[in-house]
Image (cartoon, rainbow over all chains, first blue to last red):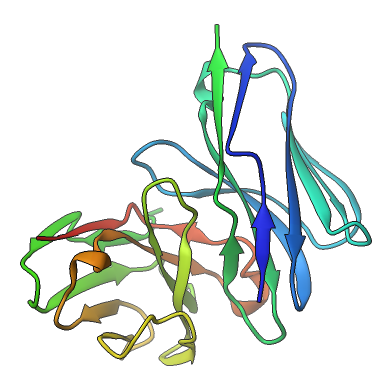
Length: 111
Length: 115
């Protein structure tokens, strides 16, 4: 089986940097994805780490440490529109092609 | 181009009824996934298609749930004898191939309410 843990809520101010952590336990592991979901909207893909290290995409970066079963999403220069839920998702279990999602972190950006 | 579309956007049905939810993936995407999402939770995997065949249906909760993708494009999720616990948002996603399944494109979902 698989389980993921991430904080339920995070609050930050505009222009700040926020880090959302994700720890996972899996019986097999291929990589870690991050998705953003605004209220009432569809999840949208942000980033993927298949190897250890940092991946940078604009204001968003994601990090993975396989040895620690840990990853994080870093959001820089926060904007009000970044207020949303953020999900880490594991691609794991040998042969399984679907993602297992965490429960999500609700980010509130304040002015 | 067009994204993943799902119909209906909302469905209210009575306990015990049968419902069908439709998903139209991005053109050319061979992999298609169904998830369901309850309030405050992440999407929960139901079934995955590669082409026309169900490659992994291990997430279907019981035999009341069934899905098809007869021509390798549009998919229909079918729920028999609906129960109040089936109420959730049902999400469909597609990806260009099984090897790129870490990046999935989600539709807006169908909100199912069983009364």
